[in-house]
Image (tube, rainbow, N blue to C red):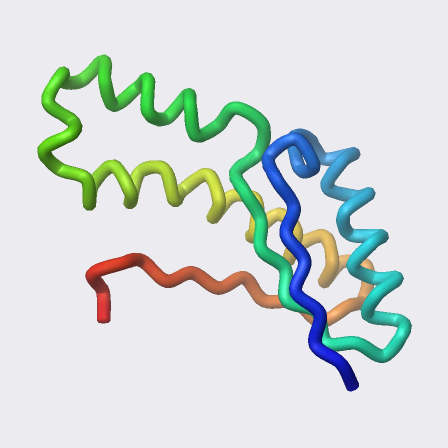
Length: 104
């Protein structure tokens, strides 16, 4: 059994319909007897929106890069959770995993 790593950018998962297209591609690879590892970006312009919101709170966001990283990682967490929910609902095994820097 091969392990295949696939990455989908923000425009590929921008809405639920596009997420369903991604799920179909993953299922097709899985059904060919592959282990699949999926890396997802945040949906659409989510990262830009989150950064803009942070900058509205303070102009000094560059001084705390860890908190900015934590904030923008929430966009990816939404994408991976939604994809896992979708794959599981279609009868396929899935689990979303995260790892934040500085949490070793």
